Amino acid sequence: MKSLRRLYEKYKEIANYLIFGVLTTVVSLGVYYGLASTVLDPENPIQLQTANVLSWIAAVTFAYVTNRIFVFHSHDRHIFREAASFYGARVLTLLMDMGIMFVSVTLLHMNDKIAKLIVQVVVTVANYVFSKLLVFRKKAQKPQPERHTDAAQE
Image (cartoon, rainbow, N blue to C red):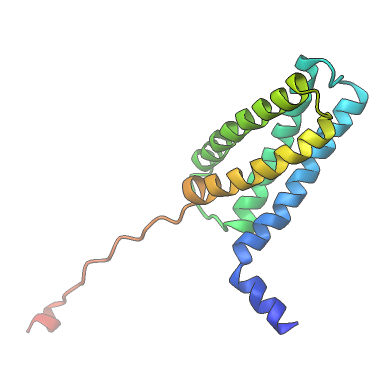
């Protein structure tokens, strides 16, 4: 048990990202599947993308909150700038998501549920990289100049 704990501590950020990534995927898939099985028709390309975008909005909102608090432990006081950066990075992966869904479902006639699962893996990896390198990167601390007191100079 101790070795498992040490392993978790060593890879805590990645482990937490994966845990919350799985939960984010559950949110995304739950919203997508819920919409695609009830009110939207995935056979219609516009409705397919509508379900996809709505699932994205729900998932990104959930991901921002959990990544900020539990994964990257951000204390940035500029929360709106940070959130805008997070959503901006996610727009890039949304475009990837939509492109892959369009090609796989609309052009290649792949099952939309299977395609969505594959897309989630690709998007999860890309989201971690963008979050780590762009959104929640640790700011380098400026070195503090040494202070000299009058007593030290005498």
